[in-house]
Length: 303
Ligand code: GDP
Ligand code: MG
Image (cartoon, rainbow, N blue to C red; front, side, top):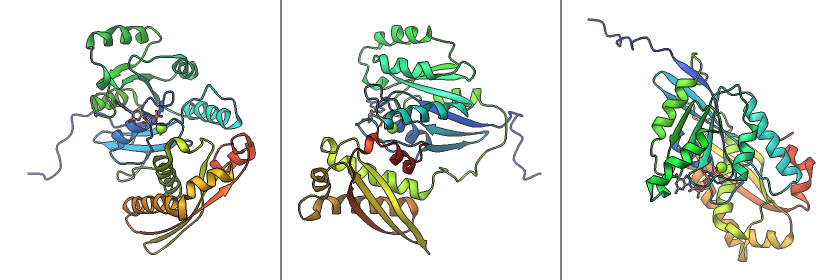
């Protein structure tokens, strides 16, 4: 008897890059985390905490999907930051094999239409209708789906709940079905192509938003000034950049307590994620007119 595994019936391996698009707060980060099964993108009840694209890689028998999380749209404001983000979304859509367009069940509006307007005609679009756990009356679901189905020829329409994990596997199958045949693009154990440096900034930013919530202005950013690794010790210098002195005081808190708490929560999570000790120092800096300063966007990876 041979010890070789049995042939799988000849189904070809499929692989590709898939963009996750949708207006802010529709559940993109939650879905990505659910799909990848590990916390890589950052979720928040406030829009726009994800300013850069995060890739999550799902590897299953017979298929590999590299998911791209786009920062979403901001149609209310027209600052340099927002147009850079919209350019980022458009650029993110260029180089993908399929698009998963996320909408929120029973809440379709202008900002969703703006997203729809950016979807090309050439690449397959799968419509995922999220937050179905919120629908009490299932009768409302069908007319909503029918209305969206009339918009274009979708490759599939899948109602899901990213938060509960409902029908996320069905969504994954619908995505795999439209991917081109090809070998895996990444190693099986690679969960993300983003550098630890980027993940460190994302974690710190998440702790910042979680701790300060509404007190924190949108126009604050986190940068990693230094990232060094010696053996299994990572030494990280980060800065939180805010607009005004008064905001700096809020971030730092009484006797530095707030900042200390944020930094130590972030450090603990980095240690868990990187699997080693982390030495983290965080500075708070003031910078005026940040959101409108196109030059500053270069540091965030936009161009
Ligand atoms: P993004 O801006 O599109 O990345 O959205 P997030 O993933 O950050 O989610 C925005 C908010 O919606 C968060 O408060 C999530 O907890 C919530 N959310 C996401 N998916 C679901 C879902 O399936 N059901 C419910 N009830 N809430 C969800
Ligand atoms: Mg997000």
